[in-house]
Image (tube, rainbow, N blue to C red; front, side, top):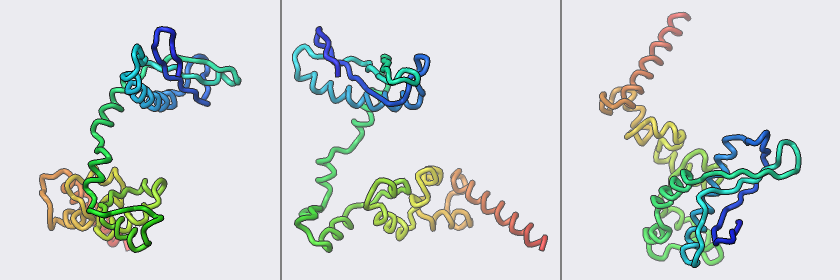
Length: 210
């Protein structure tokens, strides 16, 4: 962070990707801008309690110049990223609200609870599984098992879940594809039935060629 003589604060983001001919990779710059926007929001809270302090809405991005070890700096406007991050943070559920929804007496203290008590504590919390969880969460296998037991379509991935709309279980998806359930006017149901018809047509063609 740079503090100006007039009391202004500017976030400085130092990255290892190069700035070639005065420009850097757009995707990496965008990621750095989103990261810096979080720092700007955090500093704004501190500045609100500091007399005369104000936080700049642009950050200083420092990268290696071309293919050397010489630093090069560029000013990046993060107003858009700041606004997006602020809206996302405002929509997040507060930790005290999450804790208040837990049953009375639930604890996840691994030093004070037995394995059986910890298992029971985890079981009382709803799962929200996605395949991406396997790369980041130690409880992913537990949640995956629960999702599979419930036949939840989340086990197939977030993109598939988004395409299926109101069909939340694998059983409901198969029933809709067979024409046993579902609103024919629902685009997801119509797509499933069309896919099943194409599959049956392809299998019939294969059988006829044998």
